[in-house]
Image 1 (cartoon, protein in one colour):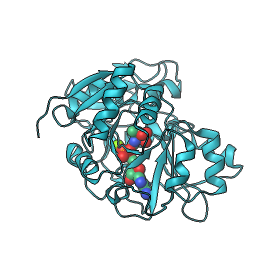
Image 2 (tube, rainbow, N blue to C red; image 1 turned 90 degrees about the vertical axis):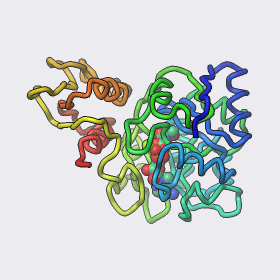
Image 3 (tube, helix red, strand yellow; image 1 turned 30 degrees about the vertical axis):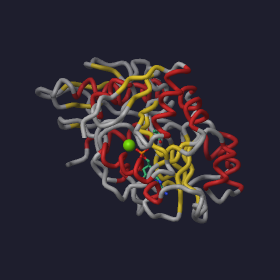
Length: 313
Ligand code: TXA
Ligand code: MG
């Protein structure tokens, strides 16, 4: 499948074209504040199947459904007090809620990969919001990168990985958060963080007024839980204080290095830079060494992505 991938700008015309392509069942990559998503009409099974095909993704991984506003979420999932608290505190924003699925609402079963739960997200990025509002329905979208590879935080990254396989990319510059959304499961007894991400766990605990479990790496099927993910071509070595041999050093905080996630040690800046810097280092084809990043706030998600990038494959 080799098609001409259009680059659309986030003007009224560009958004209208992107929405029309989605309506036709075509794949459109679009910016969110976290990473670029690869969108398809979530009610169109053929379109959703196209996502798996374009990404080369194992078909058992369920997808996040993106919605224009929180009201729409109640159509697709069983709502709860915890869902209400988290949605009103953090939507629109870098949070995904996994909730019990309401059947027969028209979502393709491919979106949920046959599970009886559904992952919902209302993104904050203005272009994403305009696209979702213009389309008017649920948009299934994983990160817009070939399966297992570094996530895309610019339209150029999307083009590099997926050109010829998707109809268009809506280009609205780099993503501000730079890490995928934090996924919170609300299908069991208590709230559980299924994937650390752009919303710190501390903020979720403060809103709920209770500690939340961290179930990363447990039984739920998620690409974030395949050991090797976000993988550059070359080897990645963590907790490095200096480069060895031919390595290129990705730093954090004040230090001598080839490229720095944040010279001032700012975790928000580091998150925004993470995937872009990995893409850049990857293009050198040299093995990558990465300096330690503190395990607090967004540092949890940054370390999670780095560990997966470094995992044996
Ligand atoms: O920031 C983000 O979340 C980006 C942007 C595009 O929204 N999307 C993203 O999607 O990261 P993806 O497909 O790369 O990751 C979605 C994660 C996967 O780990 C998937 O397994 C999990 O969500 N997921 C989806 N539905 C689920 C469900 N019902 N139960 C548990 N996990 C689920
Ligand atoms: Mg992904």
